[in-house]
Length: 238
Image 1 (cartoon, rainbow, N blue to C red):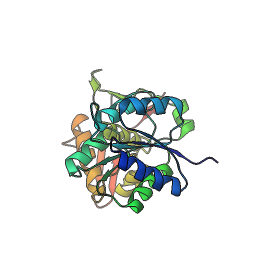
Image 2 (spheres, rainbow, N blue to C red):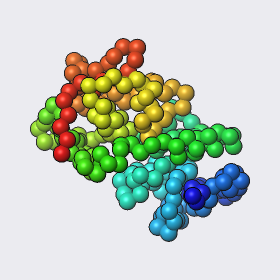
Image 3 (cartoon, rainbow, N blue to C red):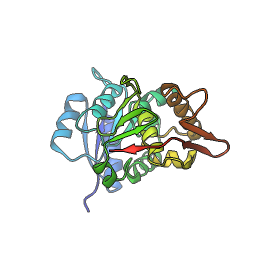
Image 4 (cartoon, helix red, strand yellow):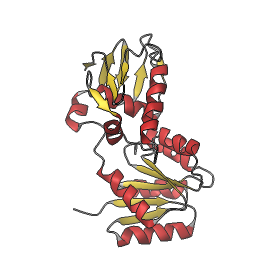
């Protein structure tokens, strides 16, 4: 099996060299890009398994790039964002755009390697056979299109979800009428908040409930105190 190919996107030549050398010494294939245009060239010519993406890039920021990748033809490539801005607001912003992880500078070599290996070990969001057969899910009058990543209210109106909210809802729907621990939801998820993981799930559930009109009586996503959550309505697939 060939080594995973990692794309390092950073406008700092020193960081590109440092990360490239570190990754090659540890068995990865590496290519680099200094900006958006170079990144697109690499994505079009190589089979990239993971992107290390600097947030503070010139012209087109890492946040904008993450949004474009998730909405375009490279949507499933794991992204780890790297930034000197390590506040919780920046972490949440990156993860909600669809990043799989977020590393704050300065970082240790062991931390970068551990985060990369953890992301590459994560299973796909859904079972491949089920995804091939199922594209539309209906529950309590709502409709969810998994392929287009769209959610429609009972009125037919489109409801906007962040990438993290959509992924969490999809995982809950995959296990209807089952209690799922917060820790298990984090294992299934494509995002991670370092340090305060359980809290990140609670915040996302709260946001989902508001958008589903479920924030008061919690009939769709129920809290099981001391354990986790349950998707409590029937699900239809087509």
